[in-house]
Structures are given as C-alpha cells and as structure tokens.
Image (cartoon, rainbow, N blue to C red; front, side):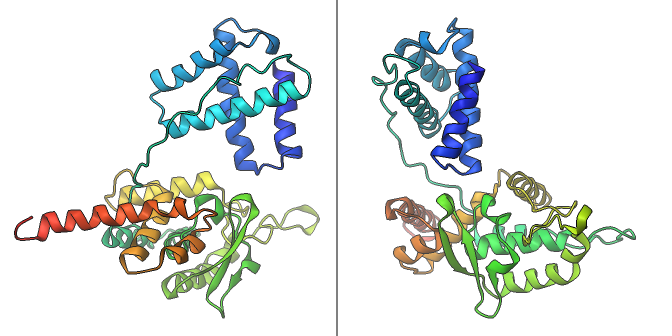
Length: 308
C-alpha cells in the first residue's frame, strides 16, 4: 500500500495543487486509514470494502472522540482517495460511494477578552537580568502577537509574510491565505510600532549567511533563531509559552484571530468588512462570530442587568 500512498500524495500535491499544509493533513489522515485497515486484515487496495471504511469512521468517532468536523475531514480524504483509485483503474468499484458526511454543528470559537489579549501581547518582555549575547526574541514574539490580533492572521500566514508585503506608509500588510488568495489588511499603530522595534533591534541579529552568499531568511518577515522563516508549529509553541506565563489557559493562535473578528463586530463593524479582513470566501463562515457576539451580550446582561 505504501507505493499507492506515495502516488496519491504526488497526485494531490502536483495535479490537484494542494498547499503544503493541506498535503500534510491528507498525508496524516491517509496514514491513519492505512494503519487501521491493515489492523483489520485489509492487506491490499483491491480488498478495501465499504464495511471496512465504515468501521474506520466509527473508530474515529468512538475511540478517539473526534468532533464531526474532524471526522468529516478524514471522510473527505477517503472519498478523494477512492475516486482516484477508481479513476486510475486500481480498483473496479468505489467502496466510498455509500459513505455519508457526518452532520456538522456550529461550535462557537474560543475568544479572549480585550484584557486577556493585552496580557498575552504584553507577556513577551525583556528579562530583568539579560545575559550578554542573548537574542531579544521577545521583540519578535510581541510583534507577531500584535500583528496576529491587529490583522486577524492565521498561524500559517505569519511565516509566509515577506518583508515586501509590509507597506509601512499605508499601514497595511499583504497576506497570502488559503488557496494562495491574497488580501490587504490594516496593521494598526501598536502592531507597526512593535514591528519597527523587531526590525531594528532583533531581525538583523537573526540573519545568518549560507554558503555561496545566499540568505536563509528567504526575504520573510519573521525569522526563527537559526535565521530561517518561522514555521506554523513554532507560532503555536510561542503562543502557548507566553499564554502560560501570562496565566492564561487553553490559548492557541487561532484565538487571536477569533478575538480580532469578535471584537470588531462588538465594536459595530460590518459583517462584510470582517469577512474581507479574514479572507473568508463565504460570508456564512464569518457569521459564526455574530453568534459569539450574541453570547457575549447574553453574558453581560445576565451578569449586569438588575433583573437578569
């Protein structure tokens, strides 16, 4: 099955043109499927049956307690795989034809209060007794947090921002989102100030030359300690690290994006404007934040209203 797996991954990467993050997700879900099928005695692609696929889906829900959205993603991989196997003549019938997508529910995203956002952003700071030669990475981390909250960025978008994407005079940043769709988003004065400090006092110290005079930074804005563009996983680690130091629990990078959208709507922003800023193709994706806004209002009324 491994030969087929490699061929399928090449198919979705080259012919379907999926982004690296999507290819990684497909690869992980496919690996989980193949391991489970082999444990059930399915040794070859030709011997995959609808029942085996149904049992795999049930296992994801029953044993791993995955949410319907996660199960739906695994199911999407199965359907694409089986269509590809059938179209390329590797199997005679498609065993995934009878599978239905699990019904999704709208889960309200976690949102930080403005005060909690401030605590997270201000958590990165210079140590009281800095050691000689220690890189001021806290300047980078604060600039990342300020920009993520000011512009509603995904963790995956942070590392993709190039120096040329920052338009300081206009106060905007060009962001490459899902499907390589680009959008211009305002940065705000605090984010611009934090970025200026990072560019002057930290980033030059992170640039290291490779052999043949090439630079590891690839022209990207935010760099890791070794001078390479910062990765999505590292952004997650930084948010977790500083959130814990700030006394905030269960915080992840997407909460800054959720908070950005929710706080804009609470301040009276138009839903279409928030949709554009987030880079959502469909406004129904943005509408979930109106539910968050209403839940916040209900909480305020229950707490503050004399007859709540």
